[in-house]
Length: 455
Ligand code: UD1
Ligand code: CA
Image 1 (cartoon, rainbow, N blue to C red):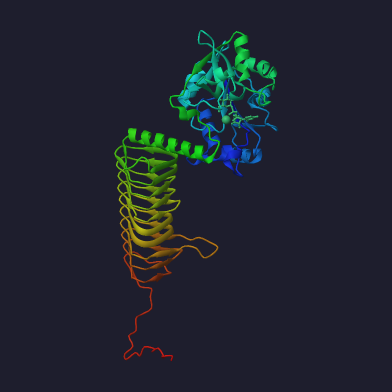
Image 2 (tube, rainbow, N blue to C red):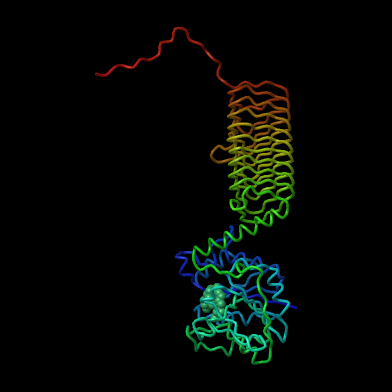
């Protein structure tokens, strides 16, 4: 069955009190609308249309993609009017309506709903609510068949007592939609063209409205203000924490763990408190992540260890390597197996060979470090002259003394040694010792300056 998806995202969201359009507010590092689009794509529709209005330009700019068609709804005259804007583009057998401010909807729930739609039947997602105030109510006849949706503001007292609410999410046979939408009127309490009026029309035309429910009411919860946004965020994080635990991860505290992207995990991974995972993070078996770490777009191979308060971005940690505490790995940092990066070390575009060691207070930028090479405390690569970047290349089993300045471009061959405190500006051949520092002089009988007393 072919499918078109229409995502409604034109509303203002006044209660956010924000310059940013509501649907661009983030949940777990992606905009609410971004989450909905992500779910929509997984249904393999033939097209996805996003109806935009408030902040249309910025929404289009932020989310532009080849498979998305943005449609401007100049005036927000109601949900029925919004869907009508997409009508000229809709050609599939079925049309699914989603909402840009309802980000946690699960793909499985939508798949169950789509199983219900056919030429003779609509699929409607409803939810039972302790307090349905504000929601459209699902009106059923004596046989419990859906006959209409009545908006809260138009409902009688008896209808307001109905606790089955309309989520807004709806799957309809595409062929009939133009006819129904064309017959909508705005003669109601809000003076809007209600999409929900399509339900009674379909029933009058002899179609059946089949209902489906989400597994969790939070799936269909929208965010109208920052408080609801925070609730969605927490719910998302709890769901993600449970997912990772079910795959064999120990989370020291699932309430103090945040995912803002796509994470894949192996077994027996240990994650301490206040860890944030961003972008695409691949974690293999037996990895240990200490407290207060931020890890973004990185791969952590089997048994690698990240100690407390480290910031890892765009890095690959080899098997059994270890990093931190207080380390910063910037994009292009690659550690081979058993490499060691200690405290207050910054790496950028640097490759550490197997079992290479950079223990303390070091900056390596644009550097190649051979296997087993050891870099003394306080060493830096001088890789930038203010305009250009240059590479530092260290062979295998090199020993760099403490507090060296390695002025790139420079090449230090395998087995070479540099003395502590050296400024290395020339290449060093294999097994040579390089000493690049002023010779010490000791002066006898030195008189220190004395302070003159003021009265
Ligand atoms: C709608 C439903 C109601 C349901 C509720 C669930 C209608 C008439 N009512 O009511 O039955 O219980 O959602 O939250 O459909 N939008 C546009 N253009 C418009 C109007 C709305 O794009 O002209 C978008 C909004 O940005 C929003 C969504 O449609 O994402 C729903 O609109 P909203 O005004 O919040 O509808 P409700 O009154 O909550
Ligand atoms: Ca709403």
